[in-house]
Length: 414
Image (cartoon, rainbow, N blue to C red; front, side, top):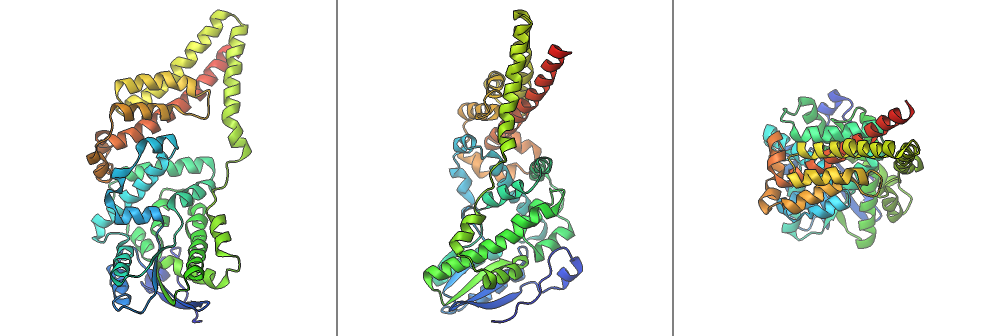
């Protein structure tokens, strides 16, 4: 087996600029010869290198790309958003994941506008060339949703909130991508660079975004090789992954299926966090009981205050999102009740009402990525506005729960 050259990570900018832009590693996995092509996600040279390696037929038996099924679909089917079941997204509480995917898309669009190279062009070229040669295409990266959820679990609650707010801010930003970001992409990873710019501590993201994916991609390659016994495989991956994937390919001893299953799990929420919403409900109900023990008038005043504060703030959030007047009323009525039932949120109810009253058109889905790049687009596009209604009414209800709780406690015990 040939030795792997040292490839600098993005932490050392000087060495990163000096490192080869398209490192090529060749190694053996059993009887299969694996070629790892390290590409720069924003480099025309990487596209040309992929084209060069796949120019002649008969050299490779399969082509692996650094994509999961979701990213593959987004890359190869730009109109896939038009098939999105928005109600299912709301019901399954995946609205924040849709926002995260849009954040990545918006960031890539800014890159494309600034430097004239569409991020992921080398992956598309690898897929196109593989199809031309009739070669199997292996999707070896982990699902982006799993990666982001594991990254979120790797951070504290406040950093997680900061990351989410930063992602939304990134959707709206029209700032130029910095030279340092471009250099990082040349030697690093588009996911790491895109999402770590919003986080306070890059180390929190490094493990799930880089190290775990190195292990996952190596395991996926071993799995595919074990199942199909390919003679030669070309793997087109980010330059920042080449050293790690090569190390894992030669060092992993556990079964690929076992590793893939382990790295695909999302760590469960801790017992304290699962119990906290019910604890809040118990406290609020206790305040209601306390109010009625002081007299029926006091008890009903407590109920009215709870409805006005909780429902009012949720309705305000829906109104700020530009929701239909009936949606605003629905948020006002739903929030005081849903706040006492952690299994359903006011945002889900409000977004469902908005979806029923203002069902998005196909054109809204097709223009979504372009329109959310500016503030006005969020309110103009019906899909984006539904996401806003979900987020704003949810935040309003959450604030209302705690503000009303402290208000009632002060009134009853003050």
